[in-house]
Image (cartoon, rainbow, N blue to C red; front, top):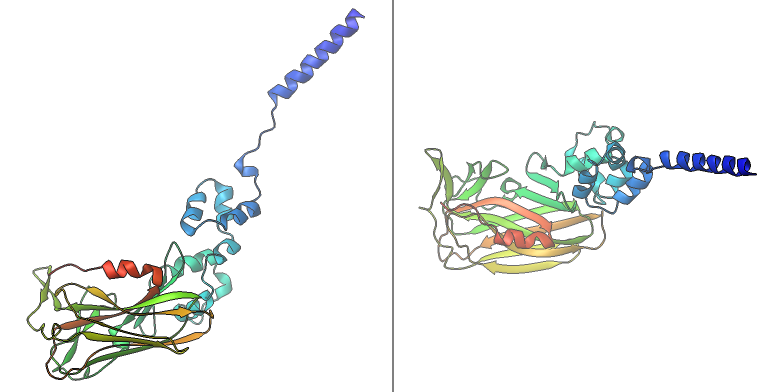
Length: 297
């Protein structure tokens, strides 16, 4: 009897010892990649990139096409057709690569327009060069010139020396994702130059803008419109002047936008104005632009 009890106790001890010395552990590497990828869809792009550094499994999971496709705007194929070479095989590009490409500044329409995605929200932003506008008298060097400058993303700005009738008109047909957008003219009073390697701004020809305000107008193909007025102030500083807002209710269909700047009171001349271009961005970004000012001369 005693021997039997002793043997049983010994076997139990051995079993107990075996189970304690060989625990079954689970690590992050054991989580299936597709589960991690599905979870990542609820994070923003910057958080996904941070999680990709956890380990190799997370890194592979962060590259899944369906993760990045969920972050791309609904019109991303339209955007790609604008900025990629027509011979590019889209099937050979991952969605992560597409996202990264669209988040960098991309020029199109012969370099007169630029598009990019906000890295955090993937919302669409546009910048249109003054060379894409219809400007009254632009071909007459007595009135207007295109001035080369590194201060513009397009490497030049339209500069008005002096004129009685100032009118600038722009038009764009584009497919926007659903949302609310704001339109701004980027302007500066004064001619940008460099002297001894330093930025300077010639204000000699600035005049006439404090007499009457400039009129800004916006209209869209679906009947939206706005009208605003503003005096141009702050010589030597780039500033964004709000033209108006518009909403896109039906995404991924063409929206035609017309915008203009005018000061056509012929009782006085106006001069010394630089036009860099027009910015179109999500409405929630507009406060950033309203507060933006360039360097003082």
